[in-house]
Amino acid sequence: MPEEIEIDTDKLRETIDAELEHASNTLLRTVALTTAIFAAAAAIASLEAGSTVNEALALKTEATRLQAEASDQWAYYQAKGLKSAISEASKTAWLAAGKEPPAELAANQQRFAADQNKSKARAEALEKQRDEKSSEADHLMHQHHFFAQAVALLQVAIALGAVAALTHKRVVWIGSVLLGVAGGVMFGYVLLQ
Image 1 (cartoon, rainbow, N blue to C red):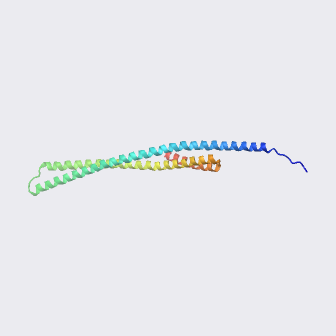
Image 2: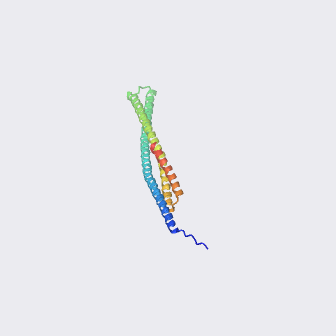
Image 3: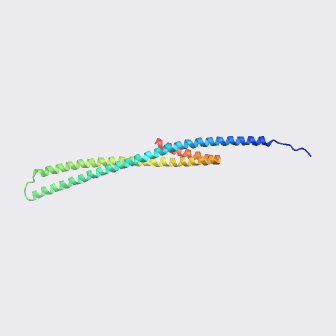
């Protein structure tokens, strides 16, 4: 009977284990690095999301204040219109009685008409400012939604990175990278607009 050939498998096993450990450490370092980058980007995107929503709310508040001032000007405009109509009615009553109306009635009517024109111009200017503030706030809210979506994608990428580190699965890490890049692209797109 021929002698069995002995193969030193212990050394082979040690070499395989060392290679697996080295590959595993490389994957873990790569996962840790990409996850840290995604976490930093998520933090910045989150700050931008909060900043844009706060600014949008401040602009909406300003638009509401401007609307209140415009409403006050329109009420003043109507009051002067009523005073002018009362003055016209008084003038008509004087004429119906066959008497000459006092000169102050005509002066009052002119003053009321001038006040009405000024009030109308102020109200329209305030409404224009209101519309500008409201439009700017709407734009910021639109940006906020993109920032929030970028943050969500980056957070999912971070979670997948943790799963990849625990399971040592490269395919999970690739999914993490794809979602993180998508979140980063979305964040960059909104930031550059």
